Image (cartoon, rainbow, N blue to C red; front, side, top):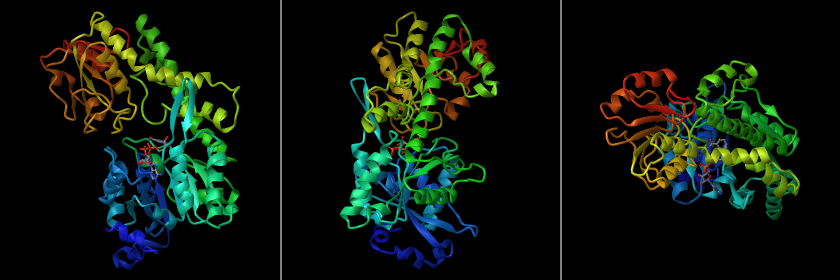
Length: 488
Ligand SMILES: NC(=O)c1ccc[n+]([C@@H]2O[C@H](COP(=O)([O-])OP(=O)(O)OC[C@H]3O[C@@H](n4cnc5c(N)ncnc54)[C@H](O)[C@@H]3O)[C@@H](O)[C@H]2O)c1
């Protein structure tokens, strides 16, 4: 498909001119532009392109938009070839992307003029956190730049739906004034602005697509009309019969809902860290303790011990509370000790695995050859951003170990300078193998067979093996240890 011609044609007429295609498109097909084709935006674009009316006709023409740089062009090209731009184990997403490409209602560009075609603009770019000393602050400049481009190109009647995780108050106090000013400069009435906020609960992994289309959504509008339009739009591709939408009274509430739900999870994980240290000293299997607690419905989501926390959300979102209070609302007297500490504890958690390994080797890791299984931040996800394996590898290198990493879901692991293999190497040459990520390849691996006659220490840092599996391996003569299991 020639995406450039689609953009140049004011009515995108070549789509409807194709008789085969016109039969499967709804008469009142709307155009949606998804700005930012990262882990959220790319999947979101496929989810929206999969929306159908009662007659099975595609509801939307979706244009994905990314930056005109190497990364942006690469992501756009993948989508234009019908491929998900990231490694994924979710076949539903792979199929959705292929189908959208075949019928031609999804394509991607790096040309901002695409925004001018859209009835709905979804903002899926990111906002990072930076720390000035101990004070967290949101890096809003790239986000502001993205919104400025929206304001300069959007139709005045387009719905702008921000999905980026932001400090509460950002849409009201940063985005709305910015877009209103852009509209005004272009000679439009600023009070026409249709702005709303609704965050994603995307879980890249086996149910990547379903985590968009089969997930409860929270939203709020800048105006009542924007909230109504958002409800209608979300209802057209989210299974709201099974997962009803939740409308909040204003955008700052919806922004806070996202930040607080991720903070809750980060704190829940951080809490277990100190109990893991205690349980290890007194030889308690903390997994068994937590299993016994989780039967209570009120405690069913208490987290398990593990290697640590990574990825683009839990590592920053709890810091958006303090960033918002100070930078958006001007409150210097509000502290967020628990939220802030959770991020510090979770960041440091991989050191526990390094220290425990060191203890297993009599306090000396110098010269030990260690293979780490898993580079990504989460099982079955091909995303290495801020992964705990990065911290673990650095901590092991600092102790003089010779570290290598393998991960079937990524082609490279540039965050650390160690040998990396996508294919599982032979276990022979290692003194220890650390299971860092519970990819299905490792959950299903016959460790006894893979390890063969070599005898490295097998260390499960992330609750990947059951106690029974570990006992069986131990009975077979393997040296096995784990985070959170006590002495096996
Ligand atoms: N990754 C997740 O699992 C997840 C889940 C829920 C919510 N979120 C939130 O969703 C947002 C996006 O996360 P992500 O993981 O997709 O980030 P990402 O970094 O993978 O993707 C962001 C994309 O936006 C593009 N971009 C930046 N500026 C742009 C501009 N001006 N125009 C067009 N494209 C631009 C970048 O090139 C990049 O491809 C973040 O706020 C994140 O916190 C992420």
